[in-house]
Length: 207
Figure: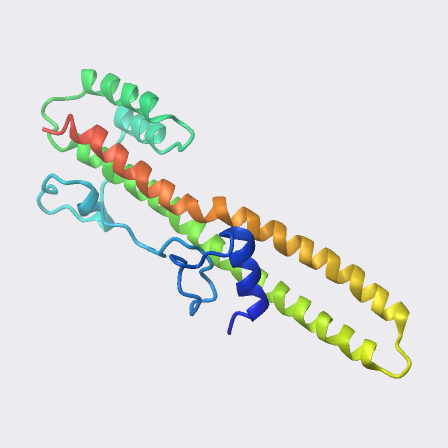
């Protein structure tokens, strides 16, 4: 499936002010964002200390008790990092000193939780993009029909008026959706940044 020229021009003009210098390649119709599409994050890159021997993210044992409570707090994106740090400090005061890997295991759980959220967001963006493509094609088809009707020897003005109303609505919806892409497209990056910041908070107390 190809993006129509109308979709490309409108999306660039509305969302990024017409500047496509750093825009993502449009050869992937499911990814309309300026930000590069990165589907999977690397836990090992964010956690700069050596991973526990034999650790496997696929078979990771989830933490329990107070550690699980900390995971739930850190996984809430609405919690400011300052409050997240306070929660970490409170946890550290009561943590079992014998569990040397506890901070990493907390991060592994947060990484998995927010990683799932991030993948859901990316999938949503892809679905959103396909809807925009379908809408742009519908707009294109209606414009084409209008041209045919206008060029006819005896134009059907009632049909033309209906098409104009439909076009006005579709274009308005298209523009509104395109504007919202600015925030939506930033969400995966914001989640990635939060994960990195949480890793830094926990690394301060990793033994």
